Length: 270
Image 1 (spheres, helix red, strand yellow):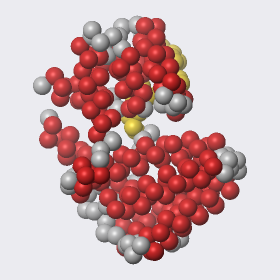
Image 2 (cartoon, rainbow, N blue to C red; image 1 turned 90 degrees about the vertical axis):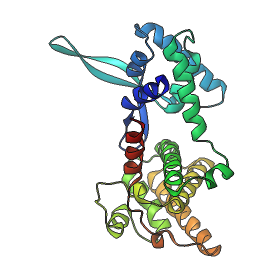
Image 3 (tube, one colour; image 1 turned 90 degrees about the horizontal axis):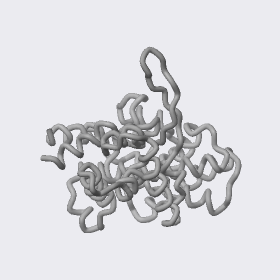
Image 4 (tube, helix red, strand yellow; image 1 turned 180 degrees about the horizontal axis):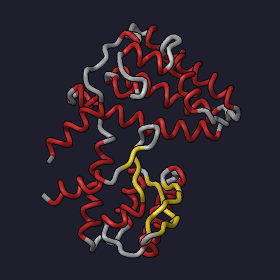
């Protein structure tokens, strides 16, 4: 089907950054959307940025200028490119030439993908545990990006240190390495990929509340930001304890990572 081919095209050029957050390069998206000239595609991007700002959303959070090395014959040159979030791709599709079949398909694809990330509570409860994990993991990735942007504004440079302060607060002193060892996974793997939907939800609450507190307190120093992350983690832990929930370190570790589940789903689409 054309729709499946479209999904494969966009998924095949998707990238992941060091924090496991998905992004696309504008020059690669341009090719899939059948634009020949960067100048013309840049006009579409500028319209998308304007739409983003008109929605009271900071465009720089979704459109990040980057340099990229490309081969030109036997030599290489540095060309301008833009790292795009899924939301940025959605806006580009909405502002592209809808007479192009590729644009029309992209509009449908990114609208559906965006909708998938905004389901109701009733819809969520009807999901399988694997699908709940995938949905919540995606939200964690998205919210973590906002948190790291806020942390950067708060003076944070060592994101590993900042992250571990939050984990220690929520996990009664355990950092990411300790959590990985307890779960029996490699330290190179992301512990968030080996969490149940309940454990992911606790971390999602930690992430969103830390982001909120850092902004509200207008924190500008790394140590203060780290302490704040730790305090929020502790507060989330105390909330779980107060309502009689299970401590995150006592929750079972799923056999498969969310990456494995996602790969299996992709294979079934082929």
